Amino acid sequence: MGNPAGRQRRSRMKPAVFLDRDGTLNEDVGYLERVDRFELYPWALDAIRLMRRAGYAVVIVTNQVGIARGMQDEAIVETVRELIDSRLRAIGEQLDGHYYCPHDPNAPVEAYRCVCHCRKPKPGMIEQAARDLDLDVARSVVIGDKWGEVRLARNVGARAILVRTGYGRTQEQMPRPDLEADAVVDTLMDATSWLLRHPGTRTGAPAGAPASRPA
Image 1 (cartoon, helix red, strand yellow):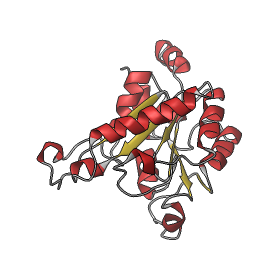
Image 2: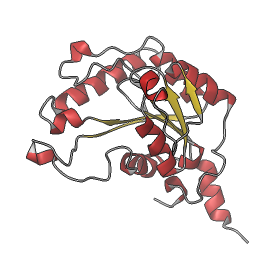
Image 3: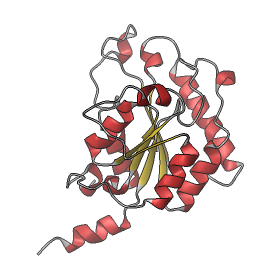
């Protein structure tokens, strides 16, 4: 018979683009301890605008292990988020969400030393965003410059796009036999173009992806 109520709820849920930050949205300069070292790629804001206009929620999910290693603090992560927000407001846009993991199981900073559920490629940040924002993860995509993003996408039943910015070109030259991205493209703008040409779900995505469950 199915579950009409469940289908109706899912029809109201939005697909999302889960964006890695460093090397995908902005230049990867290593541990970002000063905001003056932060530089968005020139196409980043336009890509976000196109994705949101196409009906996708845009959510940053980023590991910031430098916090746990004492190389930066949480304040710089918030400052960068505010900077991205201000740049987007200037073009009439915004992020739908921003999540970061500061943890490391071997961290020298004891407050952040733990085995967490949020450090990518574990699914915690996406699961939290799905609950907070009522997202349909099965119709979503993860975009990043490392195979870890592809693994994250597979862990939640989303599609994955690997970009060649940041570490992406090097990662592409080190293929993983157990992982395959749905697309490998040059930049976030190219990823956006691919996504707009290929809406939908990943073939064979597992039923019961996180966003399919009631919050």
